[in-house]
Image (cartoon, rainbow, N blue to C red):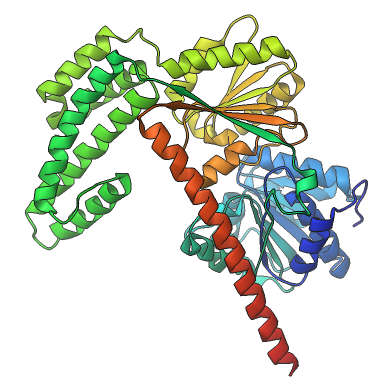
Length: 501
């Protein structure tokens, strides 16, 4: 294998010197060449072991297709030897593709299934690349594939790639342990060997006020929620505040207590369920819109659980439901601001490509309806679970890049790894509290041209809290990674020195 039309950058060469001798977690900002390191290492391994295979695991078919494109463009490997390997291909044909392929680019779930059913063996695979390695927690397919590879491959080397492994040392260590990684390489956009290749990204925060009609509904829900929190405090008096994570952990604890005969645990489970449902309703009215809230009220009314019935039968919620019906034509101010921003952008530059991220599918549908006019050509990008095949996902991404569509509206499927070089504006309909998702979203713009990111934030709501939470976690993640890198690499050098003596 030889590399074509590609000269490695200084930081890529420096990282390559590490990865060729060690199983390594590589953390790089999106759009500055993680795939290039995989190509460099693939060349190295195939030259060392000419009869071996390379396996690249990537979580979705669109991402697999991008890797096929990169290896076809930048290497001299025959097209027939670069194989895309997903669950869409029948098992018998997959076995043939595996036997005949040189570079296998696969979804990890498909590899896991074929390993369990003994259709393939990783014995002759000299390199395992795990793309989007933050998806490598316990019982994930990546983890099981890495375990099999570590146990069976004759000539082992593992390369894990991500822009965002997580903010805590425990989360990062879990990925390292699960993927058998002994080194860490990290670069930030501000590092001197990386910064020349990073496109400038302008960040803008657009704040809106929650209208009084929304506030009336919110306050009714909040009154019931506060009552339920006080009830929960009578069971757990030492707790003063309960966030979503606390409530989920409490539910788990209460369920365990039931088996020990704790009668209060049944009420505890119902209370935590009520609080989770009320918290969700508050999130919808604060950050999404009244129509989305009405859909949730309808769902609760059809819910036969005790928690749902208690909520629906409360007089304050009955009043909130009536107000929701009265104000259902009132759009969330973020929706109005979103259309204004998109129209201004396209009027200013009709070649612009805009990506809009939203958490909720029904909000995406509302955004599509709001934006679908003569100047704006929107398209929705969602996952297979939401009804869009991976073939159609690839088609829509391609057509967005070509300008058939100029606005891409997506859920989490549009956050990870997608190479959309022409996208110059990303709009976050709501911030997300996850540093991983925030980094992934931001990486969709400013890859080859100057980009801009706009956050739509409703004042005095969880929009503000989620934004600052994710920024804090991102800072912690970078600090933790540099600390781990320095510690791990020093320990490795001490080990090498001791072995030499």
